[in-house]
Image (cartoon, rainbow, N blue to C red; front, top):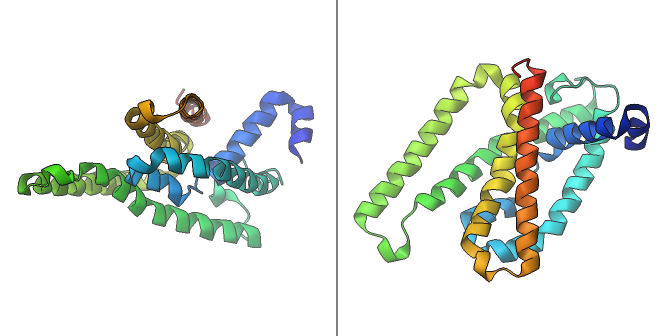
Length: 218
């Protein structure tokens, strides 16, 4: 089935829903290292965003095309775990997603904790101790939350997946970009950042709503 066929049989709403599900399943876990570079070094955010924005869109489009081809081939309307195990493409997708998930978390921790580090102007012993404590606390919180939700992975993915992916890959770095560099941006850059931020917020809200509805919680 193609997106055009889906649109003809279910209307534009059905096509957009299928497209959204495909992008969540396959595009959400393909975050670029450059996006984390924005988070870890916000001083480079405007230039970095200019360099990677079109490349990011192209990458997501290519991953989305592959994702939609697999997603629309008769598999269940669920996560990757429900894909037929005998498929070679499915196994490759499982391995890729497992690698992305396990390798993304250290990047997230490093990026978030970098904001707890004291600046060079105030790199006192007290500031270093405070920064170290905040980093340790962040790691502990992430471990506790992961363990608490480990047996409810399906619920976590269905309800919080879209908002979590959006938060890490777009909302957080874009918010900092706008806050720190608003005066340095040209009008087009300001508009681009604000539109991207608004789109990611809408995606997070809509994905969470759909997940709650799918689980009968809304």
